[in-house]
Length: 381
Ligand code: NDP
Ligand code: MG
Image (cartoon, rainbow, N blue to C red; front, side, top):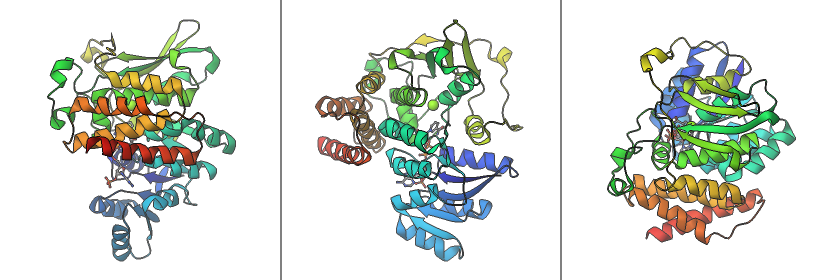
């Protein structure tokens, strides 16, 4: 039995993780979980999954839970995320919280030698070097949940990593893949949230439309697989059937395919090294799909992807600054305070003026993250 600490239980990945737990009750249980503000959904989850420890973002919500569920251990805030991640009865952390706020709890769980199933890509972007170094030191496996990285992982199973020559990340292209730059001028939040293939949380859906999501994933791949940026390519593949590929030095290419359903990579991260059945999953019917399409990315139209490669190649705190600027800019776009194309402008301005520090420690990363959000706030006043 794997006992899970789940961060971001009320979110898109969190809910799909609970679907998997429900489907395999002999294999998985929820020992502890953390939500943000959605207390009603959290109450439903508590009734159904009987966790022993629950964290809410606010102290007030935590107190309300305590009243309604006597005997439930309750915690809150950023310490609450750490309490859940390090809960003594769990052996796996599934981190599906949104944003770099997931960093400290991930590091804390690694130090408790828990297996880390990571959906929270911002943590790997903002401080990948720290996460991987600690994971190595404590022997904590880092298991990707992101579909592309799960595909790379599955395409490398049993292979000598040294013979991998190139990682090819596929990208659907997001909501605006057929729009010209001029057409991107006036797009609305509602249009941006309308992803053609995947149903996901709001922030990652916007990141998909700007292609920053693919940029974050390029960095995530470099961090997870120690591959240099020249050897990581992005390929537009509008059907989202091939989830990513690895090219080997004998010219063979290994790929992982499937329908667009995040529950499959979530389950694989939880069940690894086993594969469990997924009776409810839609099966891939290639004859019905008929054709798969591929095209190169237009880096001029999707500038965020370029920013991510640039930050990745530079390394250091610029990764933290770029990620925090993106989180802040996307938040502002979702609140209709800036336009879609201004997301890029904000990130570019932050990166141009950033004083880069190589090999930053945790304290420096947290300070740059906080400072960058302040800079963006000032910029948008
Ligand atoms: P959602 O916005 O759907 O969910 C985010 C979760 O984080 C919610 O449970 C939310 O709580 C919680 N949360 C947000 N802020 C805080 C906070 N300050 N303290 C505690 N909890 C907080 O996001 P997704 O599920 O889409 O994405 C989660 C992560 O997974 C992201 O890093 C994303 O990039 C990654 N990912 C997502 C995929 C997807 O298909 N959705 C695919 C691949 C990766 P509440 O709602 O209660 O406020
Ligand atoms: Mg992905």
